[in-house]
Length: 489
Image (cartoon, rainbow, N blue to C red; front, side):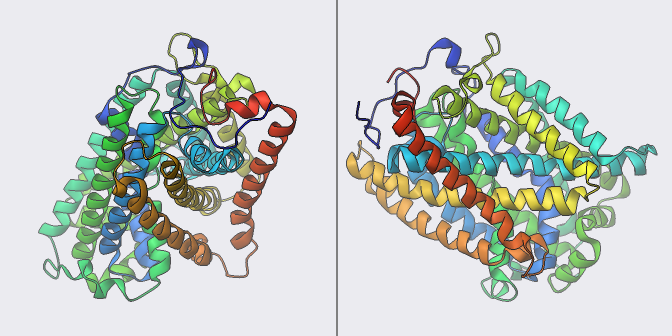
């Protein structure tokens, strides 16, 4: 039986009860919680921003957040249009399949699995180190980083097993605390500005000096997870409206919030001193500024909330990975057991368990090797994950253009053509900039094997996906026909 490589528009039958996630559980606020939690606002403020200023020397990083928010808002136009046409927990995988074909779709799926898994697992390195350090300095308990990481993995596994709306409520509470903490920090910097409030870092001139390409890479990494709204399209109340609204809201919230926080940080140190202070204090810069301008008690609380921020990000990425496993298992690309949902909670519990197992194995391997959890596990894996997601964003833009070229489905020219073309070109440029500056992102020498070995894993994943799709087309045409859509089509 011949199977077309590109799926016809509008074929979206409902999956059977054993293969379906919970229906109509979450609305726009719940999905925004998942999306913004993945970007980890306090983690970005404490780790991402000081590192960006220190490594790149660019004082105009606040402006770069605004530029990227505009670019990603353009991407969201096509992405939201696609979500109205295709509802699938595999998001990128399903969109690329519908736009570019089944073989490229499986290649994208394998890249997504590597990207989201490494992003989530890498966060355990920073979570374990931060939690262990907090316990040692504040409670005088000497706990190995890997023990703290495994305890976090156990808590994530329990929540990932439960209903999606329970996860959304947990993330909502953690995010409220996190945002309030960062806003108090920002207000403290503006009130205690040593050189007065300057808007210079928001100007174009401030974004011209220093390693601007690397600065774009660091800023882009802060948006990771914004695209996850479509992953929950099968579980939200009204996917045709909810996914687009949640993604637009997340992009605006992340862009404005991080731009404001980055600017407040330059005000707190003085724009002329931000790079020097960031190099000297590293991630401790936020806590030093918090103690200086707000108070010692607040600085201590901020350290506690950094741990909860990382946990929220871990939970968000865990749910995204579980749903990729679920979608691929349900459609026969991966073993069918991964496509099962829990009979009571309707969670993709098999995919959740698989992700937890991978995380535990990775933490155990790095601990046994005696590697630094931040410089290796966190730094290597999260940068690799971010690079893969940027590539997927560019591919999805191309898929949107081709999908609607066959059938506009009532979408306007901006959403189906102009927005995805502009965002695709911009995201491709960001991907190339990240690739060329990957040594700076890793803090490695340009001739280090890591500079090509880690990105090479994405290429290997893509090739493996393409070959697997070709195998399915030749040997298992029934499974090949299910790629990109629920069974029964």
